[in-house]
Image (cartoon, rainbow, N blue to C red; front, side, top):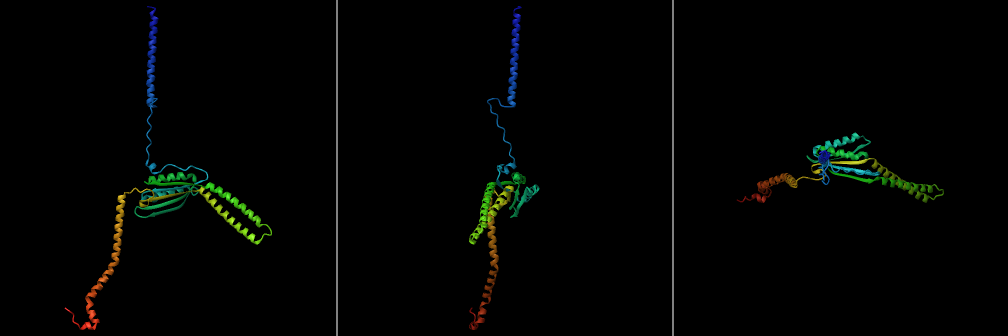
Length: 312
């Protein structure tokens, strides 16, 4: 009996150790499964993609969020067209002008403005700016948001660029070449004993070169101005004169056109009737006078007819 006691104890210890290992493995597996459920999908299982974020109304009416790539020497030109309710165009136009004035004259200037009321629902307007190139894109985005808040939308946008830097470099080279030609001609004019005809010809060439230098320098300054100030134009419209697409019903438009044509035709006939009616009344009155007093007047004027008795 004493021999079997150590062996029995050893078997019991081994069983206990095996049970503890199985229990620990079970807990570990359970924890691993819980981790997969919360943090990530188990291996071999693809997690569903998260739903896209909701698109707000301002994003759908604001156009694509695409801006030109900043590049040295490129002069950009911004143009936007907005469609709004007619009664809100003037308020939005004033908001855009106030935003420009708030930036200061060094960063934004208003160069043109127009507002036209063409009918009860037909309004067209525009606003032109000269902006600091560093803030032009953001100013346009902010302006689009203000239009969207006024229940309007962006219907057309255009950002064009010109390589003004290359034009400036080309103009600088041309000025240098022209100045060199002018110095050469002035050197020839300074020679003693120059004939009068040759001197006159050289004077004409020198004047032409000076004119070319002035024109080239003016063009170069204009291109530099285009780099320093970015033009931006806003166009507003509502009703039939609104820029962009027209979402009106074709049947409703046709009926409206038919009504306008009928009213226009009736007005034309009324004008003709009013113009001819007085003349018709005068002619009718003259005809009645002729029928009423024509016979006695002829007998009074003609003696031969005066003695004849009227036939019955």
